[in-house]
Length: 411
Image (cartoon, rainbow, N blue to C red; front, side, top):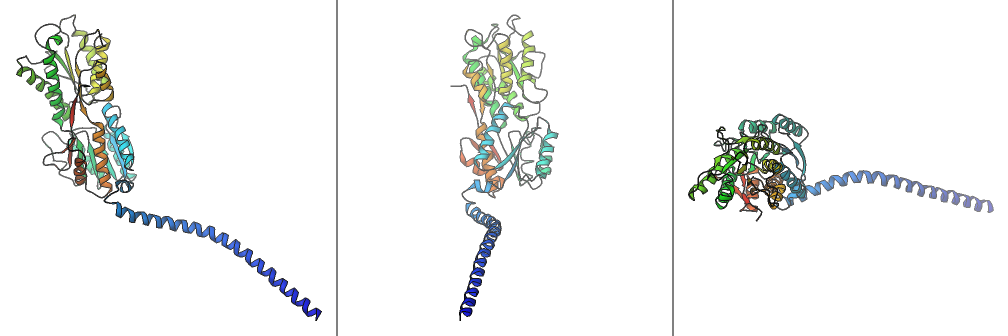
């Protein structure tokens, strides 16, 4: 009996040990399985989460452009980072795109169309699915078409610099479905500047007539020979000023250099640069000055960059240095921060505001609408509705949005 009891006790001990060993293996297996399952589950969960997000996206198509915009890979192509106004647009557009959750990369064309085209081609190859383009060669339908050919099915938002020659509106914008333009109505800045100049000269005529010859001599600085904005600013900046003066019985403005039949000096590089204006003005002042009785009495510039160059030359010659010095009125376009400061300091007279934030916000709105599945034309309509005082759709061209100009004198 004792042997039987001992045998039974021994068998029970064996089973007990076997059970403990089984529990330990289960734990190890469970731990291993848990790790494996976690990895597998995480992958599955990620897929599931993506699916869930997709479902959410379907719901958000009407409300949340940021979620839709996250699928965008945008290339933003600037003609030249060195342009002060373009630098302002770039800062504002970076902020506007980020606010909408849009992924983007900026590119500097460095004033070379060939460089910009190469950048566009590379961006598309790398998966860019929306182009925002500030063309180097302005007012060129051939350049715009070449970019559209590079883009293929990728939508293109052109901005700031005209994509078509004057008088050829719609020849490019009407030829493609995946294209739009956001910019300004080219003649408007020239008209506003000319009216501003004319009124200022009329109000200060005798003080401006430094040599007392009964007429006001002026210099005009043009940013680019072929750019339609430059052409209209050069034309209307003088024509509209003369209209104001002549309506009041005053003589028209007289270009300072009678031998220059063009009536302007142009940046030969088409860069609208302060340096070009500085160099021209330094040379001008060496011949046309108060000592010679033929001082330039007024300066009109296509943009604020060139106005700054002119003011630097005037400062060096003893003008526009504040109280106690003679001020030659200088006018520009863009209302850059630096120009506004010069106006505040009494060194510059006026400018025309080209709203960098307004342009950037419109571009970002159209980009977000594109990410949500809207056509570029519908995106333009949505942007226009944001601010009807600032934005206007071009007559007869539904995919062309104008951003309004406004005079600025610091008051």
